[in-house]
Length: 185
Length: 196
Image (cartoon, rainbow over all chains, first blue to last red):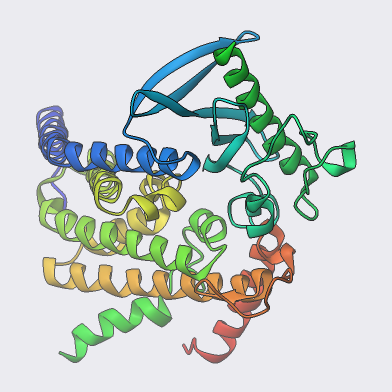
């Protein structure tokens, strides 16, 4: 059975346990740091690669538009800018909705992908899986079509029963397009 | 041998953490939106449960009574953080869906409950087996609950959709469905399996 408690053994046991546990975690952190960083880089590269045409290299920069700061990856191929992958975050239905929006220098959306979201599973979460909703962003030209959902008089097909998520998604794309516009001017 | 086997089956049926002991309801309700999520959460808990049971059964004799809870919590939290780091490094896709709930394993009463009720009073071997039994019981319960909710709510099983592009009964993917399914599964479980 457990030992009788006194100040000395309580301090020692608790102190030793904490010391050992921190040592184990410190070691684990050092060992896993490299693969964790690699996984984060792979994820970003995948997101950038998915929303932009082929490129040689990217540089990570940021721009301020209307008081909001946008971080973006500028993709360069053969010395020429082929597009910007803008990280755009808005408030969705269940929390922050973070997108990576690829925009070519002429202001046309190349493609979009969801970085993270907290939308309702089965409803708003479809913004990440619904093929029809996702496909409409490919080559969306904001100068020819209106960037807002059909219910609000625009040209974006909303996800069934998820107007708020669709609006937020559209807003995020719009912000990204505006950021690129500001960059190109 | 028979005794060892009993330690494992006890965790599955008689001491089933979800359907009988009603422990760990927070991860149970929150993560079982699909069978895969339930399964992953169950396996993560299994991992922590077995390791913490083993370590706690080893250190229990020297831990003074008055600080035993903090010591156990530190041990459990260490394994959870370890698991979190490993998942982040080697299975980033799983971490993405479950990441939010992994730290919650620390406060999952199943882990501390088994440490208190079993590991601190039994040997290493028995504690490991108890951890495996209860862990598998939890995993099965979460997988079944996840499967039922996925079939009803999204019309798919383990990610394979069988109703085409149509919508399932969405309520089952959300919180009310979790409570409903859990309640009915508990009724069935206690009617047909639990014999005492």
